[in-house]
Amino acid sequence: MPASQHQKPKSDIEISQTAEKRRILDIAKERLGIAAENLDPYGHYKAKVSMDYVKSLKDKPNGKLILVTAISPTPAGEGKTTTTIGLTDALNFIGKKAMLCLREPSLGPSFGMKGGAAGGGYAQVIPMEDINLHFTGDFHAITSAHNLLSALIDNHIYWGNALGIDSRRVVWRRVMDMNDRALREIVCSLGGVANGYPREAGFDITVASEVMAIFCLANDLDDLKERLGNIIVAYTRDRKPIRARDLKAPCCAIVVEGGWVGDYTNPILKPGAAEAVKKYRDLSDQGRVVPDLHNRCWPEPPPFVMSLQFGVQIVQQKDEVTLFYLLYNTVRHVRLNASHPNNPTPSWQGNSVGRYEGDILVIDTTGIKVAPISTIDAFGTPHSKALHVIERYRLIDGEAAAENQRQHGAIYRPTPPYGRGTIDPDKAKKGLQVEFTVEDDGVFTTPWSGRVTYRRLIGDWPEAVCAENPNFFGADAAVPTADRPDF
Image (cartoon, rainbow, N blue to C red; front, side):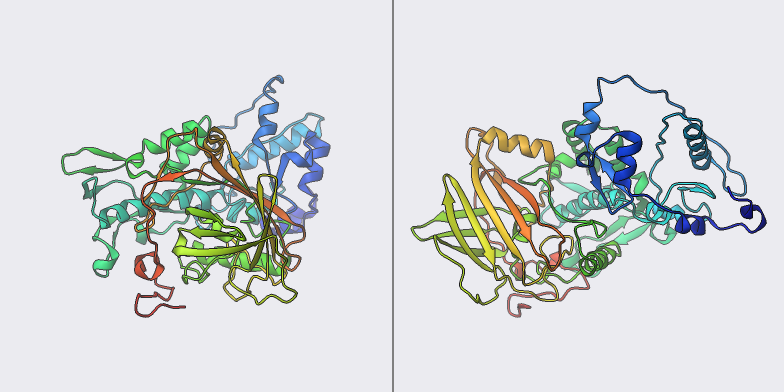
């Protein structure tokens, strides 16, 4: 600590922002021996360690653990976190190989009397403001998962209440990562028949969510699903408990296994694209419906049309493959053994040509229309006229498809009229795997890839008409109707 800190003290944020930061990939390699391929970077100064790498260390001897337990902080704020960081710095200073483990700060208290939770003075972790505000987005993910279940409960009651939920005995409250006493107790579903059945409800802070507790305690993905399914969300008039699994909340119909850009700090995003993704997420965090192709009932291009996890039928003809998506009855025409025209007319789903490479169907798409609300995923990632998507479809063993879903999980939204359809339990039947690569030098610094796995569905193929489901829209979106679609 410089002597000037005693004479003219700097604030925590001043110290953080003037510190000379090193790239997290360099620190991981030099200090911990963790190679870049074992890290998932969130910008230049934050990263997650892959679970495969963590599992690879199981046969190595354990180090020594120092637990810094409850401390009453001083008026200046020195408490558990500041002490832990100072102790770790001291151990490294004397030549020990020391790391620290802190809990992620909750956004609400960061704006209250308590303030942030990244330490203080010269005993803090940086970038302090990123860590205290959004970090890697995990709290947002927990919030979304928790509130998805809340929406399923009210949606189930609205569409007939087959489980007989007593709306007076719904015990699953909503959550947000902010301190707002006005939302502790509320009345929801006001505004008429279209908004459901009014009832008392309320908000807790995200860190108090049972989803958060289960996420921390689960041993693996199977244990996580089992615990989530066991959550009691409500009771019937006979005081019978209703669990999350009764609403089919943990069920998976389609799995999205990776590749989605998602976070505005992702280093492959060019500055303008990163700004667009951040704006999209900020509006979503405010609970606003963001105008995009999906919310306007317009056809989504690949890979967006796959990311929303609705079913697809594929019809093979002599010179064409036709894909019928359950989502808004979207249809894609793929001309086989053809070439792209020199100047294709831009369209929402682009110009698609296909070919077979052995048993693999390869679809090449260009000419995708650009509009102010055009995105290629559910995170608001934009695209330019240079967007080029290559998809590779292949049948895989049914056991492998089921294992992909078991390993990676997914969210299946059974919102009528879209939710009918049941996974075929016969794992002897083939699954479908789609690997895709996205190239767009107007948005990304490098191509990126992802994978989607489908399992066979049995039962009726429902009709999904966007204009007949106005409850899907929020107050900020223009609601199309059957007689006045917003196309």
